[in-house]
Image (tube, rainbow, N blue to C red; front, side, top):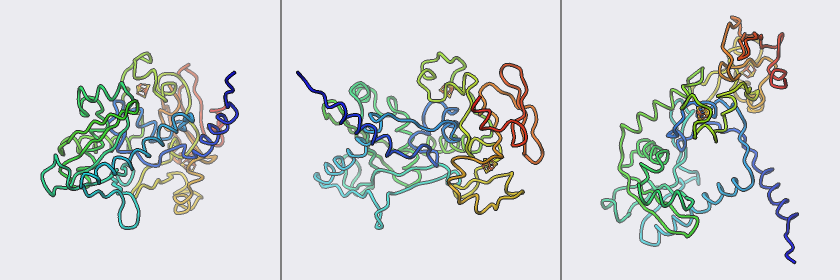
Length: 326
Ligand code: SF4
Ligand code: SF4
């Protein structure tokens, strides 16, 4: 009789989930700016809900990173010169939108046979499941994985690179797909502007679709808050007092002018993730509610809920944490 190693598998899964401590991304990633729904990107950037990944999904992410070395090895073996880190061992990072958007490119290479001699080329490495890979072979990256196309355009524009080599592997059978993408600054500029519209928006951008049954909404992490009356997590980014400022920092409108030292607030990642007792919900973070009024000193905010009731959210009224607990 087959004896499954269930306890071992459970222990591995639990350890993988425990070790993944990054619940929120600090910036809006170039790899997702081209996704279809701008509203879901805003919820993500504003930390409406912590990311919860199963062990299997985390292993999939890890698999993608592990494949990068293989891609670099293939390129090196055919004579390309490949750089994936700078002299200090850091990845090549690119940021824009006051440091609130950006990403790290996989590598830059010269000597890529399909690119004019000596011209540098961005290299982007991706893994695909069988269905996605076959679609990629049929339609190309722009038509099949538009967010990857946008990501490459942002990097090419940011690093002044004329070409990109998109390298994809089919996880099912190790088949490879390689495509050269040329730089298009118009696309890059459209998506830089889109990033600005997300980062500096104080209310949720338009929905991709008004119907919760729409196919892309059905698997969206934010469908409850977007289409029903769910409430966002309490942290500084879901607070109406927080504003993105320069250098990827955030300013607290309440404490800047009140009691907490602004410089210390900016350094305190912990408070940023958990919020404080003065948290008041940013419009859009209480699903279906509409803003009625807000105190001049931002100590409270009044909302009309989806059911018609009015509530006052603030330290001396209904605290956010209690609202969330209801
Ligand atoms: S539920 Fe639909 S409209 Fe709402 S954020 Fe998600 S994808 Fe966008
Ligand atoms: S009031 Fe509190 S929760 Fe809101 S931004 Fe300031 S420190 Fe964060």
